Image 1 (cartoon, helix red, strand yellow):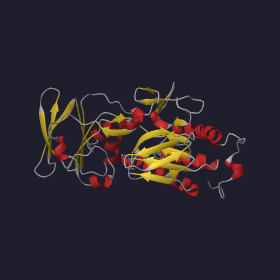
Image 2: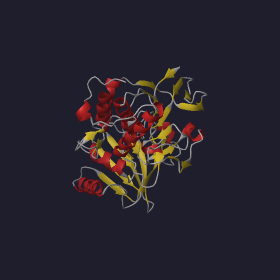
Image 3: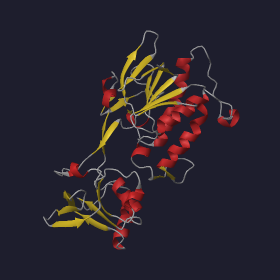
Image 4: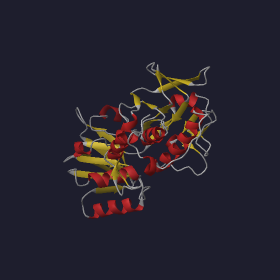
Length: 336
């Protein structure tokens, strides 16, 4: 049995920062995550992708942000249960919660912080009949290590930020890169759209719009894709990798069965402290919803900060919480 003050479900950036805010209040944390390493989507999907809206960092790679968060919380010695999914939750007679994972690991805590990002997620796959035969043999649904695409021929499909950003990032790394989108217009940031068009004009990438990849083929690995234009014309293109980037299909997974109030696959919370309809269970980060919600990492950090203040009062009802700035208290010597 693992016992802690705050049990955090989800070890993404919001979950990790919760450890820091809780640590300042001398509350101990333990994190559960189905992924084999901390960082959530930042580690699993786009560790080499730059992020621009973290205060104090004009630009930081997603993987480096996770590294910095891990360094920031090291002093508080959080526990981790990785590679396991939180499966069931039970309210005990002493008022605490018992959370059991899919592998039977039991965790006990008076406070639960659900920081599961989008929940469990899987990539949206294009409707190509035999595409599963080439998965991890030339078909990749996310870019984990950009170096594997160095000096290779790549076809990317999609019209959102991920497709645009990776096309721009890989343009100088790949031998040849083709971006295919079914429309003329794109859904991504205007500056990214402009950059892609400039790369196409400079013949650094091939941009094919009003078209879709409809076929994949090869002997033991991917060798070719078929691109169908909206006018019916077919293009057979030799390639080493096909990367369809159509976003993720989020699912709450077992959390959906915990008796929480839900709205459109997200957990409803009170914006006073991001507590759910079950006292003692909070939801922070992308997994929650409320009027005006923005799914940004920096918003998750704010939510985690307020949540920890309420968590302290629940755990220590007899103590008065005196807020102090870290510039006054410092960090050295603070241990949970």
